[in-house]
Length: 67
Image (tube, rainbow, N blue to C red):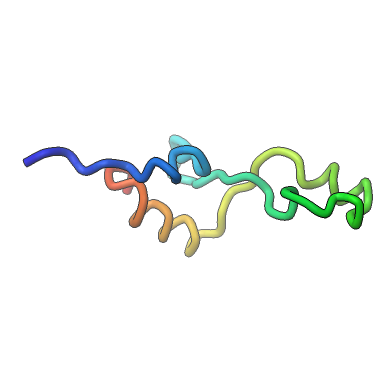
């Protein structure tokens, strides 16, 4: 039987760390930056670890070999 494939969209959006946490980009940075304060824009840089229930969904559904 062939190997299961990782969802290609998930490869681009999530990263699984060595300890099993799932990292994702901060939300709220795609458009409408004029409405946001400079402090909000600064704080939304980089990545954030998903909560445990969300990480479980991502790993189970999109990354078949990272459980």
